[in-house]
View 1: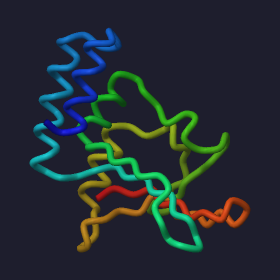
View 2: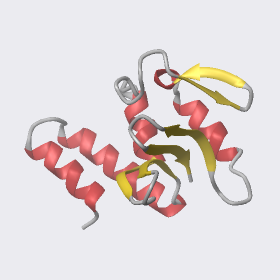
View 3: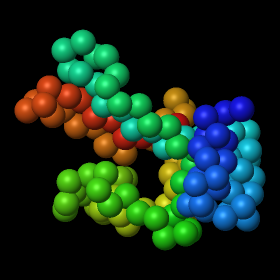
View 4: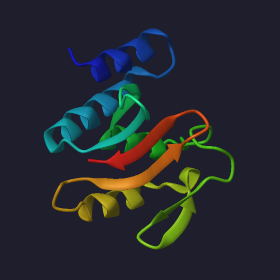
Amino acid sequence: MSEERRKILNMVAEGKITPEEAERLLSVLKETQDKAHFFRIRIYDRNSEKTKVKVDIPLGVLKLLLKFGATFQGLAPEGFKMNIKGKEFHLDEFTPEMLDKIIGELDESGRFNLVEVDNTEDNERVEVYIE
């Protein structure tokens, strides 16, 4: 059983989501695993390049969460803006349609970089991308 599937089933067991919501999430999870597109967040130690944080969210699950009204609030500093293809916006402005457009614009490497930040104060490098 995949980690994502286990998490969804645990959310049902904990009463966080209904079985119907879990069914939709599991359906989207299966669909996205076939397409293999993920929203990824990586935080590396700048000295060793060792991964400190690794988050992989299937895009289908992310789109479903966005449709339920979830946002990225709290993931980035308040007022944090990104520049994607010349357009500036906040992380909490992400929509399912924007994700579809980004998937269509994946470069030949199959990766779309959203954010790359060198945090010299904490000696970390942060990458947020879709692959």
